[in-house]
Image (cartoon, rainbow, N blue to C red; front, side):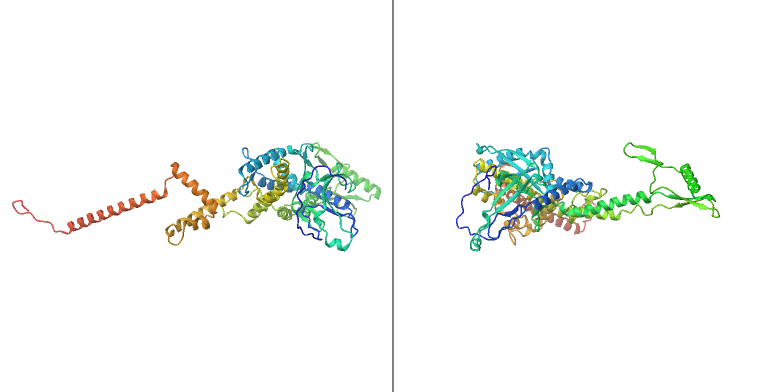
Length: 537
C-alpha cells in the first residue's frame, strides 16, 4: 500500500495475544475488502460508495421538509443547550484517578479542542450536521515537523468525499488461515475532493486513521454494513405523507367548485352551424379569471380549458329547450384524519413525542403526574445521542494529549472510560423529578427519625434512603463540620441539649400549674363562713 498522508500513533506490541481467524464485527461502516489470499476474493467498492452517497443525499432532502425539520430542531434544542454564560459541555474527571496537575492539563487541552471546533458558537450546526448525515468527519491538521505543538486546525470534511476503508490480507493456505489475526488489517480513509459518486472506489488520497476524527450515529444496517442516520426510519412515512398531501390538494382543487351544465337548444341547425352557435354562446357567457401566484394579479384566461370549467352540451329540437343544471362540489373536504395519522407516525419514527406536534397543547410544568412516558423515552433518547456525539471530543482530546506528551497511547486505553462529558440541561422534567424525589426522601427520613438508634442507624439512612456513597459521606461530614465552625449553622448536638433543658423546664412549670389548679379546686369546694350581728365572722 502506498504511504499514507497524515500521522499514526504506534502502540507497543502486546505479547501473548491470541490470534483469531474470525473477522471482527464492524460498527463504524468501514468498507472491508480482501486483497488476495486463501479465498482469492476482491470486493468492488463502487456500489457501496454510491449507495451511501445516495443515502446521505436523501437524508438532507428529508431535513428540508417542515415536519422533519421541526422534529430535528426539537431534538437539537434538547441535546444542545445554549447558555449566555456557560459552555454547552464540560469535561468531568471525578472518576479519573490521576494527579491534580494531570487533570488540570486535561481540562486545558479540552478547552483548547473546543475552541478549535468553535463549539460554543457552532454546537447547534455541528450536532444538526451529525444527526442528519449520520456521520461526521474532521481532519486534524498538525505540523509534521513539530507535532509536539498539537493540533493546529480541525477542518470539516463532507461525507460525500471521504470513506473509511479496511484492507485485509488473508493467508494463502488453510493452515495459515487458522493462525491468522484479523486485527492486523490496515485501516485508512479514502478522500477524493471530487466526490466518491462518479469516481472509482480506489481513486483518491489515502489518509491515516489517526489523522481523521470520525463520529458515527451508532445505527447500523448490518446486512449492507452501512451507517444509517436516525432519519432513516422516517423515509417511508415521509413519502406517504407527501403523497397524501399532494393527492388531497389535487382532490380539493378539482372537486371544491360547483360546476354547471348548459343545455343549449340548437333547433334544426346542421352539425357544423350548431357547433359554431354553441361556441359563440360559450364565449359570450364564459367567465374564466385566473390568479397568478407569481405576480399576485388576476388575469383573464379564456383561451384555455381546464377541468373545473362548466359543461356545454347541444340539445336538438323537440327537447326541453335551454337548461342549466348545477353539479355539487366535493363533500367532506375538511377531513384531515389521514394527514394527522401520518404526521403522528412520522414523529414516532423520528423518536419525538407526538404531543409536541400539536401546537395548541398546553404547557405542563413537568410534575410527576404530568410527565408522560413518551417524554421520559425522549429524554433517554437524547441522552444516548449525547453519549455518541461525545466521541468527537474523545478522539480529538486523545490526539491532543498524546501529541503534547501528557499521556501515552497505552495510558489512554486505561483512562478513556473514566473521562465523561457533562452537557447543560434545560429539561424541567428532570429537575422537578429530582426535587420531588428529594421531598419524598425527606418525608421518609422524618418518619424514621424516632426510630434512629433503635431500629436504624444514621449511616443506613444516608446510604439507603439518600443514596450517598462512602466518599460523599466523608466529603459531607467535612463540609458540615466547617459550617458549624464558621457559625453558618447551629450544632445539632447543642440544639438537642437546649431542647432537653427546655423540655425539663416545661415539665417543672407544668407540675407547678397542676398544684395551683388543685389548690384552687380545694378552696372552691369549702363552704362559705357566715357573719354575726356584730359584723364578726
